[in-house]
Image (cartoon, rainbow, N blue to C red; front, top):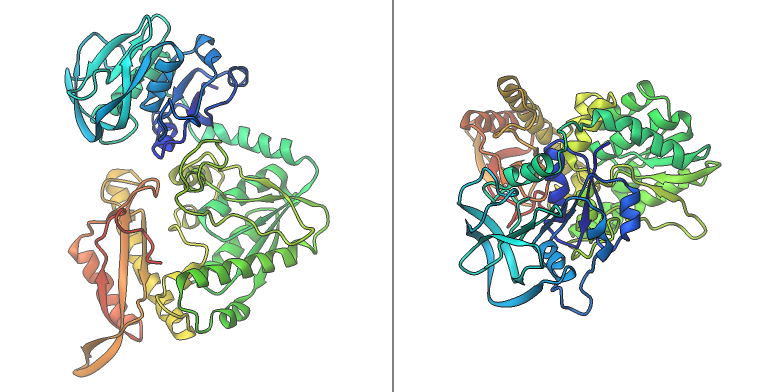
Length: 523
């Protein structure tokens, strides 16, 4: 199989490189930047891409690359720090400029370029740097520049080495996709042939090879990621897998029943349904701080989970639905990069004393939409595969303030209306465009219950009841998101239905904040 290795130097944009390569239907994998050239060669890659990174190449702890990498005879493309480390390693010079470039910049072609072939002489790219190449290595030609950056791109066609100071992987680089296509197909001679369907057999073999005859346990939340891991492991090892579904009572309406039906009737695995609703209700009573809610719910989940796990014999492995954005936000713990930690990842496991399992994370190099495609190929039903992303603490963090049975019932019913109407809206767009994620489709949508009440009039009488906030966003990978530009008639129907069908609600509002500056969730 054709494969592009992306060496990770710790860039927050780094994950997008692998993603853009896959968008062009070429398989890619992430490896640490300091991986020895021999190990990289053993992977038999077709090409190598060097990511950007936050460091200066002259810093004491700057990430390095094995110089032997450039003697493998493979096409290599570097971005930003990747260009700088290529130049430094091969005898060029990197300087610290007085003026940096951050955001859009215009490059001008100054020489013929295989990498920039078919793109305009002047074009807008996305820059994010202070250091830049001051002198290119021997054999390299400067192919473009800006007013600030004399070496915006360089290449040595004889050795198939190419680099840009800008970021082609970022959508703001107008011809970034064309530049990547030039490298993959024009320079490397690859074919756009990769898809999720032809990856399943490899993933199944990987799980079987790692697990052998041992047993695996999975904390099944009912969300997309854990469900896909469950389906994958079910195909690979069948009854060697035990799925533990901890029902904390904070799931969306009808979800527990749907999850149990799929994993007891469609897949041949052991399924354990833990009814912990009452225990969670007591622990959360009177708690309004969101971080405290998270801590309580997460701690209790592992107590419930390990209570089951310790009753099972022969379990060696714990499977998890960790996906690639989780790893990036945790500081690239699996790729070995040096990315700054954005937030602690929820899948960090507090094993009880004397208890441990080896970890299996078969989705840890995939993005959410890729995971959905994999789920469909594995035969999961659409209502699981296209289920909206859902936080581990469930509806507890979509209820602002303390969680009570009354609030939980209101939110479950209001959220069901939002999902029903926007499921139908997305379905109409799918029929019109043939695309699951068309330009105006919603990627995630749900209801939020704030800790306030408002005055209203219903049936000629004054009411003092709760408002419901509707949140709907467009995104592809959860790294950024914009609020969905829903038609007024759709918003109007959602509002009318919630007020009419959900007792205790007299007002509906719509959140129009993108990410950033907001987040998708409210807490």
